[in-house]
Image 1: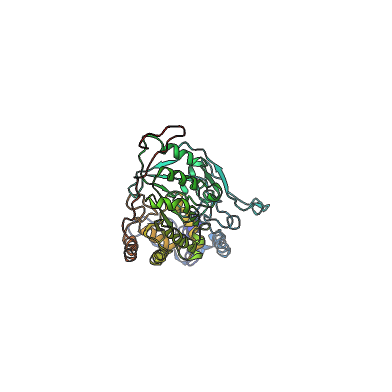
Image 2: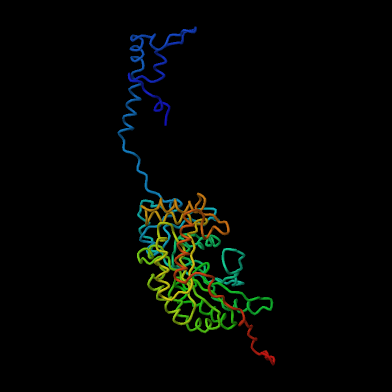
Length: 438
């Protein structure tokens, strides 16, 4: 804003500078004459001298007031130019595809006047085979009940916008947004790597978790069947495994899981975030519908496979009001345990979630984000152990107590089934003679 616009006009139309010029030099002495000493004739003379300049200023201000305000296009919280057209991302979770956080440059989309963006095809799923050296990942987090896991896939086609695994795509030079859902990686030799690691004399068996980073039964598992082959290896070694999924495809492997369950080697957790089909499709666009997941719990339970329900994540003011209904429905379907995780927004997920929330629930966005920050000391996320998966403060405490009361009432509370390592055996290589006691 210019100094001329900042200047305040007096009722007569003179600027502050013009008024000072009309008053003339300040007289010396303690009783200097004020503005009134100049008299009406002096003011009239000053106005006559400065009238052209005053008129110009007034005319400019009038034009600025009459002009319409600049049109500012609505912008999401993501990087400028990273938001993808709704038709291209139909059936996907994230709204944008901003460059990975380690990239030195960011590419943005813009229309150059030739409507070239309209010619871009819909996003398709691309799968790249990855050759890894090891397949068992270790962790030392006190927040989880396992110290090792297997992830046969990187990225996940389910498209859950809140997935805490999204930031890992940055290590491949890809976006945590739509790239995470459309550019997937598979480890086709994971079963062979697992057998090699389990055969090492130094290996000490403990429960291996599957589905802790990306879903082991996401749609591409139908084609690659890596998860099924991993289970075959674990069954052969008598190794315990815990599975987390939101897919009904896990029921395909009942023929492997049921015999393992008889030995106390397996349990499955089905993630159910809502019973509302519309909300489920918005939150998890390519995951199984709520009624399919409940049906999967029933099929697994009927086959004698211990099955838990996992309400993860609970999102304040969006699905946390369904806690009791979800647990009731899961118990009726045959679930024997229950657990929950509050929404986590590390790294890029915070921006992705805000974009998604503003796009799909604009009337709730401010309230939801406010409650999230209440649970994390005014921040979007607190990574401290003990708080990152539960939150802190009155709201988090209330949700936690509601869950505990409902789980206790339904008999879903407690530590649950302990898997055993008593059946672990290393198969003898082909051609090696067995000993007398084998």
